[in-house]
Length: 278
Image 1 (cartoon, rainbow, N blue to C red):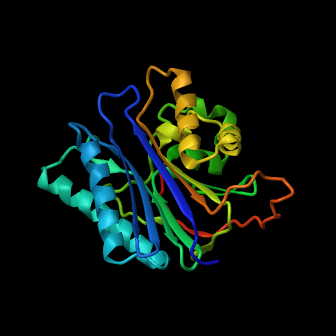
Image 2 (cartoon, helix red, strand yellow):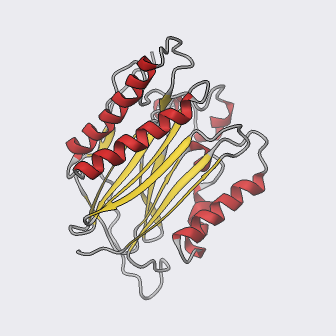
């Protein structure tokens, strides 16, 4: 596949918070695309600084040399981690609980080869829809995900967890960070749809709802607007910042129609970092 058509849309909203600590960025350079989203945390607006540092550092590295393999992308994410750590030291951060940190999720697309790379740290997510089904999704670096994997709780009891947003890994953390990166470039297909989003976006939407809105949307803008409207309808007084990037490859077709070919379902292997919740 060559000369892929790529359509991208992005949104970032403050929700019910006093400031927006999410940051999103999209750039295109010589046939390559970089989509990056970060969700920051930290007192005194440090969360907003952390997420902006992450996005800026990823885009700067992308402009210098677009990643072509998992090692390249891992190095780029570790560079963003170093930027947040350096900012903490410059500001004299000593309180671990309030020190700035950030999640990140990145999608790299090479339109000339028809391949993509992605990686993440934390609980900002990437989803891939193909032929009407989710065929890939990042796994959160979070206590909730660890509890689910260990069988401590099931999906129906997630809301009972006292601190559902507690992370096991984040950029800027004191612990060593090992980004979760797809092990090798992933072959794209016409009509693939990606969603990169912060936890404030995905936590209030059922996957089936996102599916339905995708089918009904004519453009990535329509898709994100419909999801944002659904979030507003919930009228959650504690609504977190919510941000997302939608990316469509080629021409979208209605799944199951006569014009849509059956596509293989592929679950790419990820190189995961492991953190003991201790």
